[in-house]
Length: 398
Image (cartoon, rainbow, N blue to C red):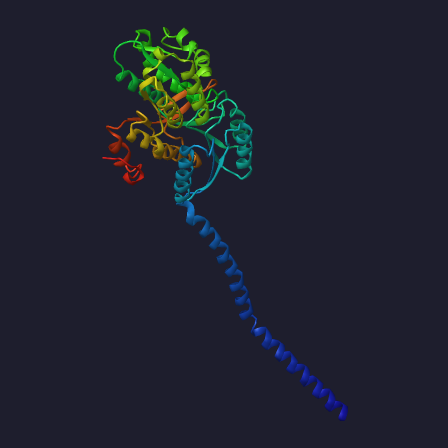
């Protein structure tokens, strides 16, 4: 009986264990629901990054690399500031490097920007021809190239050229001299930019087109370039002929070079080659340097000197009567044009070109900004009222 009782108790225990097991099975739907919730939660979390990725779809994105020629001229420092402020405000990444007048450093800068993953390159070449290799390296890396203010030559790797109307710059400088010349035999001193800069040729071409008829008819007499004298009866010059003249009168866009050349010119000139003098100076920096030299020569009775860029120092010179005019190239407009071209390319669109310049290989689509002659007469209207400068930046303004 005792064994039977033990056997009976064992059977009951096993039955109770079975019931417990059945009770556990009855609760399994809850873990299954929990598992389903756990499975769905990551799916919702996976969608969240997708939503976040879609949120900036309308926002700006992309990286722009900019290479400027030098920090030593106020113009390029101004451009750096405007580029950085405008692009960053629009939501783009931007990296700006300076080549400091060195084509090898310029190429290194471009390679560095390519490594950083820029999608558009804006470059103002130090040497338009030497910069072709840098442009080709960018093109080969899938980077769009915008030649800014100076044209990159002898390559098909340039997508767009953002510039002022450079022919008009030289023409307006020359027209100022023509408009203020009377009589015959007026001494004319010619100066140009760097022979390595394509813009120097374009500026000179624009100036020559206006000056040449007045040289040919005797209104002006060229003093400091026998190459120009030999070609004075030729209305249109080849690039090689312009190179011959520019080689004699280049300032290399450098203040000291301009100063030294002006001193050498006046030292070799006779008193008859002085008197009331007319000076074609290529930009504001060289204009100030040349003006300072001519102002110290006692045989120079008066002089008119041109410029361009409306640099603050030259605006003060104009107010003071030490520089005669400048061609105002509103870099705000040029920077805006370059940014518009860059953002269009980033979006896969074509910028709106208004012309074209041949760089020796292709006609590069160009976006051109207008230029304005500034003298004492319209200085306040053009530069102060427009907000380009504040009247507080200058002394002697009326």
